[in-house]
Image (cartoon, rainbow, N blue to C red; front, top):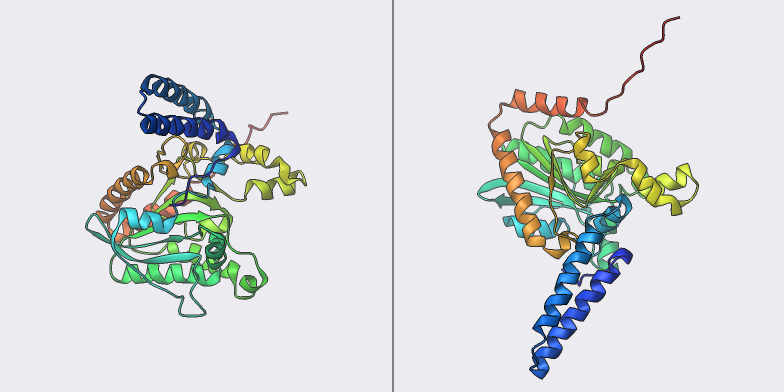
Length: 325
């Protein structure tokens, strides 16, 4: 993990945390009992956290989903699994470092686990392409899924991307076709698929590996057809309107659960998953285990039918009654 950086709305909290830490160190060095003052400031900090983190706007949750200290796919793999062996390449063009996957065990279950991977610094972000997969990333994903199907292994997918890479090279190599093929083929994979949005769930880049029997989302993650900035640029010709777009898109976990897009929300500690990655990973692992156990009890026919119906039922509209003349 990298050091926890602060977002604009978190600055009062971080400043008070730093003051408390400074006071503790001063008392320890000078052998002065400052416990009453420390306790008073900690109570003030708890109240401040409740006021700020308890009333986050949709845009602030998007910012938390993008927090540079937030755990990424490989972090969760190391926290939740054992015996992870990474597999590489799409067998057609190259290995995409923006999308990782391989074999692992989760509480004794042998699984194929995969997901988008971002970088921690400039050098790694360039290598990982900021978590924006190329066509070979999506082809690698479906290759691993077919392998899982062949060996009757459940599939776990961790989603965290601003979107699929839109560059000329990616388009020339069939970006849209790669995502469309995944959407088509994932509907027919005859082994349980469990997905979780752990950070950003942007557009077709997320949906290209999002056709699952169970879809979970972390409390401060988002899942949307477009980024707030992209939406604002289209609707208002101004990306500064991103906070308004975030509210209009209904992209946060509570909205998505209400609309039936996701099946459950993984709680995060106040301030985000990076505040306690182990606790978040443990809760997510329990949900994944429960889902795999339930889905493994179904026949292949039931599994595919339930998956098909899950996505057919998303999106409802109501037509007003026709007024009689």
